[in-house]
Length: 252
Image 1: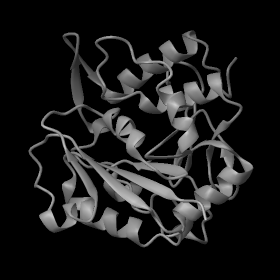
Image 2 (image 1 turned 90 degrees about the vertical axis):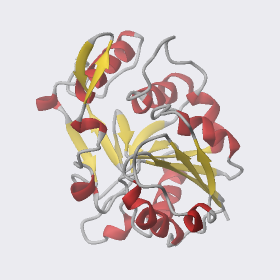
Image 3 (image 1 turned 45 degrees about the vertical axis):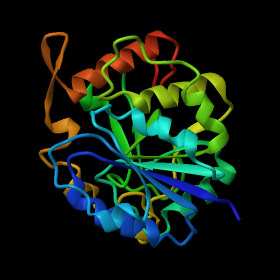
Image 4 (image 1 turned 180 degrees about the vertical axis):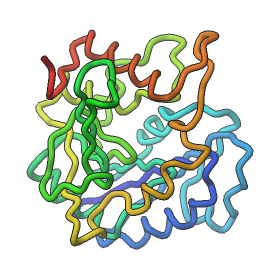
């Protein structure tokens, strides 16, 4: 049987950690090990008895969204699945990913994005997955909220490093998809999210949890003296990726 390692990311939304951990433990496919990366924040601490159920890394700084992918280097399983802290999977999600990977190898996630252009023009973006259920596997430009991949793919993520001085708040999803496209024969896919079986979904409470005040998408950030939203930063990263050769599904 294929083995699976889980990496959870804890930052400011620690209130949902017990629910997320329980959802991981209830997966129909057995989980070999669970890691947790805790970035420094002023959130309520995670209870010690929950920390004792996982391999817990407590960082004394906020290293952003990329650090958890470095933690994946410690995983021993065949597959690795990394979750955002607002993502609660249905009980069949991991099995759904394994089944999908057998026919569509590459990078899988619970929400997929098809861009209309390289500027991340919101009115041209199509999203699939928990936010718009898809009955069959769909190929997309990038995936987010959760990333499922074979351990052998992990070195591909780190084959090219982010630019010196890079602010690691966004962009790991674009980077990973770009690396998959550039260096492998695999694709980027959203497994089926059938309307009649929510237990197959990668996120069953995204609509409720994804828009909390702590979400990256709900805040502004200082980038070289300019206040920018996560969407604006994503647009910059997408432009850079396309200019460096990343091909979009709807590329003109």
